[in-house]
Image 1 (cartoon, rainbow, N blue to C red):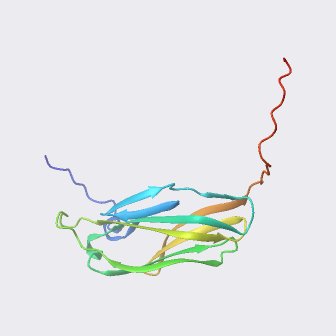
Image 2: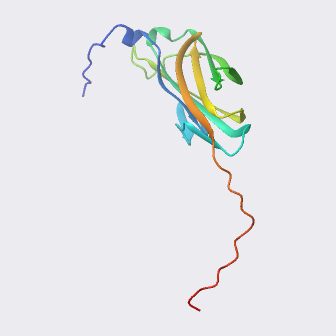
Length: 167
């Protein structure tokens, strides 16, 4: 059985690196070119008081690298901006190079998953926070989250049992 192939819509469609996914999660890990995600794609952070600590922030990115960009070094950076668009101390930087697998057909793009989990992320105040993904110093994707304050309910032990009025 053969696959039918068609021409791409534009030359850019086969020559541009694409971000297939960029998101926040509770935990993200990559193993054997597979991404494992827990609690993915949230955009609301609820805290009773500020400043607050997010116990873990997982960040997932999936890229599609065109064939001609394999065997080239790429530099990436993931950062976070706060409600005043200020850069926060959440920053991941690195370099990578992709190579076609021995199973790849000539001209086929590479799918590159990347995941990281950061512990104890400080959220200073309510408002909009934004993750940013830069590849080779070019902003490729953003992901917006909003932190807000929820009422704190105070309880002191278990309430006493009420007598049954029918007895």
